[in-house]
Image 1 (cartoon, rainbow, N blue to C red):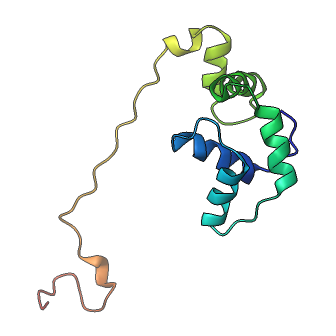
Image 2 (image 1 turned 30 degrees about the horizontal axis):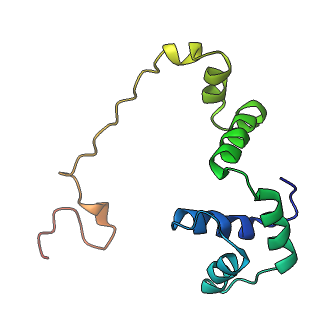
Length: 122
């Protein structure tokens, strides 16, 4: 897929598919973009439609996701490593950290709003 189309055109295309239109056309993409006040570029939409014609969007996403796993540059590195090594890294579960519960009994405010903690004059 040549990256002539901007993300907003591709996003509108995908939204049309999610909305049940399995073969979005230029009018559908323009309608989605105009509904949010966005501007549509006919040339970019036509290029996008040309590139996607006859292709299964789910397969394109699947292929792209596989490429992201290989080229991931940050965050989620352990998931990428687990995928690349066949899941060996996932065999060792990380210990869960226990959260300390805050005590609700001591909510005096420490004089934050004036007065002392033992004021019962609400």
